[in-house]
Image 1 (tube, rainbow, N blue to C red):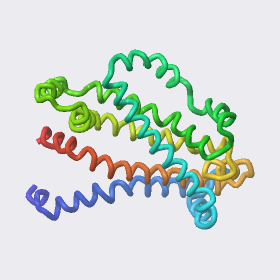
Image 2: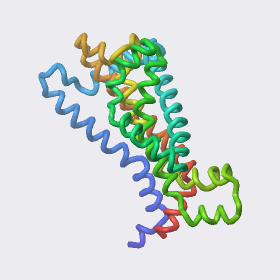
Image 3: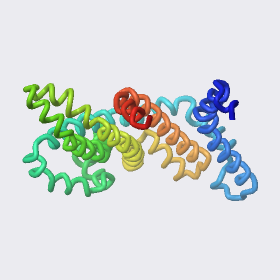
Length: 268
């Protein structure tokens, strides 16, 4: 067992865990996909090589500027607006019980409405514009952030609150140094959930009413039986989701550095 405790063995395990393991499963799935599609006669089930060629021909060029960048721009605006609205409103509602009791029926009512149902209404009010698509994204992505912020603020340690009272800490200082840091793990959980909802609603809003964008282009390929191109659009959406998750992971580790440090100490 001595060699397993050597620095070389530990370094090899870290490399495998950080690089080989995450790539191993996708590679294995690609091999299975290629073998299954090579013996398939279904034209709606193309192989990975065909889809990668369609990906290069479709998205590397003008389509990236005309379809991908506008979609990413609307997605970024929707996520940013959802985070600002969700954290600001959730903090206020979580701090004041009377406000929470007043708004709770209204929040439950609107939360129960599926955001895609609102698309025709938002179209009538705002027209077929980028603003309409951003509003549709916010209408769904804001809820996990809002509700998790409310729960996080309400769960602030009562002992710490009493200590803040005894030291006569101002309301703003308490919010900045006690409430928001204590609620930040729940807030980040809500943001993580909101990212996937925002990506879904971006696609749906562009499928309903748009002349450009990822959702529009994928629907266009499907209607015209451009199967490999349609699958390449789906592949691109998956890559966008991976990029969002990776970006969120970097931000989360920075924001919750203290929280992960405490967990590591508790495990030790």
